[in-house]
Image (cartoon, rainbow, N blue to C red):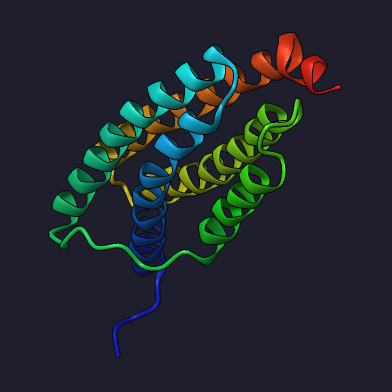
Length: 162
């Protein structure tokens, strides 16, 4: 049985976020299409492009480890994305739709920020300097996306929903 150490935990978590990013990539076009706000739609489309780059960086980390890039089903992201689908169905054609989409997107971002923050700390502990750099790039993008979504919510979307 392989040793269950920090390196194994890092790899398991890497597989988890790899799966999550691929699911997010599939979900973003539907969210963009459902959005009423042009700004929110643009934010989803921009993040779709960023997510493609994030997946590539994860694949580079797998390469650095000499492991195949494979996902491991992530129940957390499945649940978060399912909630987003429910919002799209239940609030379609209502003033609250964009606020709900934004909320669902921020739940995704917060999950990603938590995962990438953990991976960065573990990669640092494991002296994986190249992985730390790649994770740091993604973590910065995720935080920026979260900030953009917050600004959209505060500046317009929440008021329109009220």
